[in-house]
Amino acid sequence: MNFHIITLFPTAFDSYLNESIIARAIKDKKIKVNFYNPRDYSDDKWKRVDQKPFAGGPGMVIQALPTVKAIEKALSKIERNKKAKVKIIFFSPGGKQFTTDYAKNTAKKYTDVVFVCGRYEGIDARVKKIFKMDDVSVGSFVLTGGELPAMIVLDCVARQVEGVLGNFSSLEESRVSSHDVYTRPEVFEFKAKKYRVPRVLLSGNHAEIEKWKIKSKKV
Image 1 (cartoon, rainbow, N blue to C red):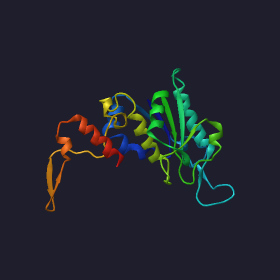
Image 2: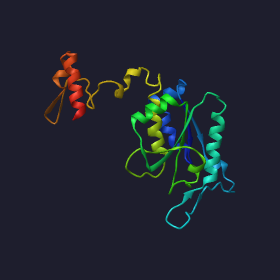
Image 3: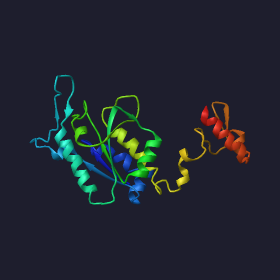
Image 4: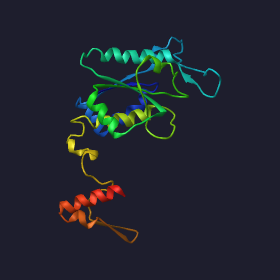
């Protein structure tokens, strides 16, 4: 699985991509992440890519052409692989709600995913007239840019790729699991109160443990 990220701030991804499971997946070549900065495709002397919105209003809008050229660069890299299947995702607060099922479908059907990360007041909407892309939202809230949503979607899609988690049965969504988990010690004390692991988890009765997991997941 190859991820291609269109962003004005590629270094915003450094800390997340260089830690834990995602870092290992990149090192083991289970996934690959490439960045394309619209500033690199600006004709402006100062590499400026934002302008005031037509019809007025606060904030600035990212210009269409530098963004289009950055996407084109990503697509030209992908097209070297004749078997590539591409999905382009445009992050928008008004987009379709992102879900694990969406992530599963993406990982199953596509080899390459392009993330288009907006900033400021957004990206000139004409970009969406040029490319076929999904409008996606990670929640009913507004963020300052598309970088955090891109990290969320990358993480969720990447973990659907076989080998990324090491043991594919680690996928909580593909097995019976509880939102609550426990580990040693069986009992610990804090401020004179004892906190215990639910007895059923210590019972060795797998049927009852499965029932507990199902019940606790619904709570």
